[in-house]
Image (cartoon, rainbow, N blue to C red):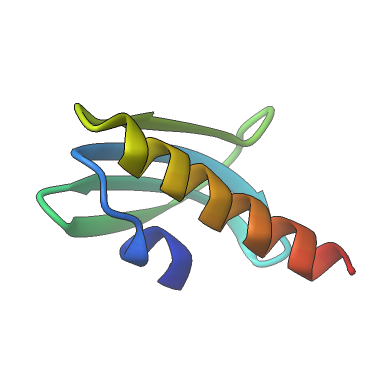
Length: 71
């Protein structure tokens, strides 16, 4: 939640399978909504933004978070 909240984009949508359950995320106008889901076949993320720099920054933040947890 903290990482997704800190990402600046026009729109973010995601479905993530985690150790704590399956969650759907929707972020518009800096408001992040999280919904618990019953099932999903895989995790996925969509970032929409008119500024390519912000998409690149968002991807780096997500990669740093993912790889930091694997170490």
